[in-house]
Length: 463
Image 1 (cartoon, rainbow, N blue to C red):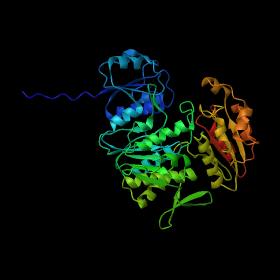
Image 2 (image 1 turned 180 degrees about the vertical axis):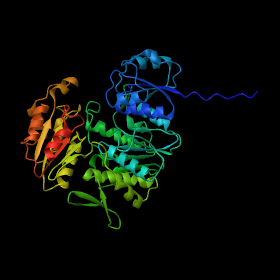
Image 3 (image 1 turned 30 degrees about the horizontal axis):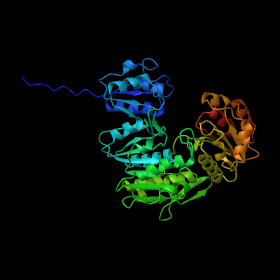
Image 4 (image 1 turned 45 degrees about the horizontal axis):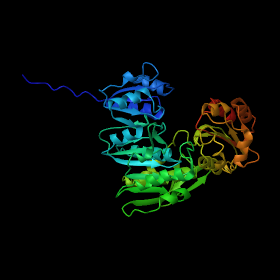
């Protein structure tokens, strides 16, 4: 009588703080791979709630339950939203289970792959998105982990058994509540990118020097026969990406050669042929150069890169078109740090030099709402014809920050005609009251302007 072998039981993994943006994408990616996934969180918002529910992964109830953690788990992955005293985390430690942060787990899952890590204070999402677009255009197999939802990609994380490479957006923020190392230190890259360094996350890196040091460590982690690709014009990057290791290939890049005509940007290749692209601005032209250098390392020739990049739509919330009219256009952007604010406003002004630019920035992050950090914004908001800064005093209370006076904000930006608004209804009324003939609107925030109907507002402005 022949024996029949039983199919292997898939490994079980539990995710603490499964409702997070990247964590719920990891849960879905593991589920697709055949892993038995469970998760928990004390609050789960859309779109994570619906996406987890559709996959049968939504926790039965919100909260932390130590009984979720048992000896049958192959691993526990803990997200940043959890606290060090999380009861499920404590239970996992008590049982001696393998506990990973998100970056630790991504590294473990890609040990046998070539790891390409895109770091930098700005541009890393766009560079990562560009590389993924080009690789997919040419039918290459790859895994990825990126911090934003990208057009044409169902998930922000993909982990497979057969992809030889993985493209990772390398965030410099902390790895987990119990691991205070920056995420991009844990991926152990073979090819690394530093797109530029501009002090951010003041609540974690209290000085510019401490912040820059994290990138120096990343640069120094480039292994023998590895490649470090960096923005050669960025002053802060120059301080840490200098060629010091003879076993590493250092590649500096600048903005790609281009021309602008009638609000449209064209790349120039070696033969001075023009390639129309859908994105614009100095930052994006640098991002394209960085992505091109990475793709070259992965065997994508220049002419093949150009063929693919022509159809790249841009990353979500990065100079994203909201509405276009006959004489006006509305864009939104994730810009919130000083360098991003300056680059984004300059890009739109240069793309449409004949039009007035009305730009509105929402202060929403810990750094941007911190009086000690605010002076970093001096003269970063000079490009628009009309400049507005918005913040909600209740956000300061929620983040346990001291009250912020409108006069303090106005003084920090060093722009006498800056308009500071703290009520979203007043902001909407102010914008509706502007003259929109031959004028553009740019809305910049990592938040939502307190639920302001941007689509409706844009439709009115461009009508």
